[in-house]
Image 1 (tube, one colour):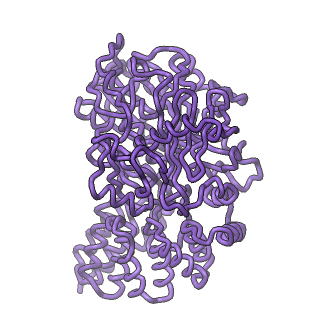
Image 2: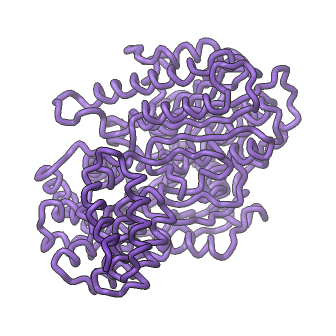
Length: 640
């Protein structure tokens, strides 16, 4: 989802910082039996490119009539194309976490954007680092920010978003900028244009195109046309990256994958993240290079298979995972694949959705479960749950085990008390019985997302960035008339009113989002912004200090608290909060400015001058804020 823009005391980021200690080892069947698979060719290097929100059928090699992906199509022709590749969740952070760890979301803990990956699970990067490979990642959007746990093992993790005015960071950046960073890194290690460099390397590049909003939303063109323009742009950036490898390309395993798909009205869905139909789970997955079997592979695979497959091609130790080597003996048509979405629960208070796919059938666990014969009904149009109760029951049991809810089946799936408490607090654990009978995805009164299709589509139009101004406010008000207990809608309407200068109407919506326990500091930041705007700094401080405990290290919360305390003359805690904020995010320029100002107010002129000089070194040469920083620096350098 795109972040709402917000009237800030300082500035606001997008996702809540949360941690989830979901159990590892909840899946049925591990992929370690393929560790001994024999590979004739060994890859020296690994390049992974993930393309956000890329539908399989938007790629020419997967049947797109537009043929706007010549780079991906050529890669498919020279390597392996996986016809039935699926994401384990239609959400950016947890899907990427599964790719890098080989684990389903219950194993790595990131079950939604903003929920950090567990720090004790190995990843492709940590394995590469331990083996002495040069490792780097360059990402294009805030949901993959280092604070969410994917930076481990990467010697360089490029996740800094642009700050057009020199101060406020955006939530995404163009793929061209991301690839520029990756090319500079390759050159620095001798990995570009050289067949054998001084060291082997592992590189991950994430492109945010074609995520919504697509192109210029005001140009009047259909959304799908603008989406395909961004697909073409992503393909061009992949070409730049692969061309830069030069002779090293022949010794490099290249993996190209979508992290999830995108819906344009299928099943009544707009966008992604709510439903677990194949519209948003099916992805393109392409591999090329040493040890890759050329051709089309029809057996179902998942992003969890990328890690064991890549490690085997690199001849590195394969860590325990839920995936298999897709070129080994573990790949077969009868394996079970799992997928889930916690977004309905965490964002809107609806039931979570979980699914299991096996032997050409797919079951979706929900208040009203569904069963599809996807082997014959790939568009999932005919629900067979009443006709096939035995098959539905069997798959329901698998869903329970794979999702980590039935802890009686496998001792490895027993969660620690903190994990169980957190899941229960989300309304997700409880009502579960051994064997999956009567399995529920939370309290019985949680709405089934299928019953909120129209509402979900309207919400997607809001979160996609396709609506602005009065049209956005009207849509949010209409949503809340239908679903008054929707915390996301309340928060977004609060920001919509606040942006127009109407904090009187904004505050009740921020308070309602807080009362509905939206797991984010955002509504607290919005409410505090309004309170500070009318001069009630003490109330704003109280609001921020009441923000969720999972946000204690949120640099934006800390910066706002420090700024407010400084204005009240409470110097020591102000400096402590602002210092911690810039320590967490050294490029948070506005926080550093207020830190310099806090030092000046406290009479610590040398410290103020130091921070002001540091800020001038970090600010772009043309940043309009430089003049204000210069004035502060001159003021604190004047003799007393």
